[in-house]
Every structure is written in C-alpha cells, then in structure tokens.
Image (tube, rainbow, N blue to C red):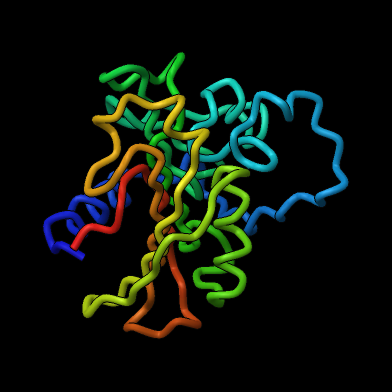
Length: 193
C-alpha cells in the first residue's frame, strides 16, 4: 500500500475521539433471518454499509455524530464513515463511500481474519464479487471486489485506482499477524499499489 495513503487512513482514524468515556463491545453481526423493513433500499446485506444512504446507515448503525467536514462517527468511534453525493462530500444526503472500522475502540482490540472477513461482509454490497487479493509489505491485506450496484450510485470519479463498481477492503494487521486484525477500511476503488 502506498505509504501516503496509509498515512491518510491512519490520520483519519486518529482524528476520531470516542463520544464518551466508555468502551463499547464489538457490535454483533445481525442474524440473517432478521426482518429489515427497508432492505430493498440497502446496497449492503443489512444496511449501514458501503453505498448505503446516510438515512439507511443511521437506521442500521444508530445516529452518528459529525466529525470534521466529511465524516460521521458511529458507535463511539467504532465506525467512521465518509458520505458523498455527486462529486462532493455530503453528510446529510450522501452515500457511504469510505468506512473505517476500528476494533481498538471496542473491548475487543483485535480480531482474527475469519472474524474480520465476517464483519467486512456486512458492510460490502450484496452483489459484491471477489476480483483479487494481496498482502503487502506494510502489514495490510487487501481484497478487491466488484459491484454493479455501486457503479450505479457513485460518480465514476470516486473509484480511484480501479473501474466504476470496484470496492476494496483493507485489513490492518498488527505486526503482519493475520490473526490480529485491528481495523478494516472499506472504500470505493481498486487496490492501491
């Protein structure tokens, strides 16, 4: 991963302060049988994922708090989301374009790769198909997916280093250990080399 991009991701994660002094538990992955009345509007399996609207995200993840000019913080800084509309950032009517999931903001500061993949899947589009994956020398593991639904809701300019519809999940490994994932970034675009 480009060190500049990693630095920006790290800077984004460091600007978020927990909304209260308590440390939340890792939110549970919803049961697949759970009835979600607005499921048809969701791009992700249960809503509150990449490509979903701010209203859908708030409905699924709880009302978020503004952090900076373009991010909303959910669940005491467990989730940091950037929303966009057209070619601009839009915190009110935008769609989730980049999501940072920080396990360090919970009482489970790191999870296994299997658990991280399970969590990431709830944030990815329902129609996402895996295109490629790679481990880089900086301790990041990347999986690139393709999604027709994302290409329909985002301006092509939001798909950096890839084609419209590309989305990449980046797993932050503690000291290169795949069983110590401390954060996941999910964003539009391809794997940055």
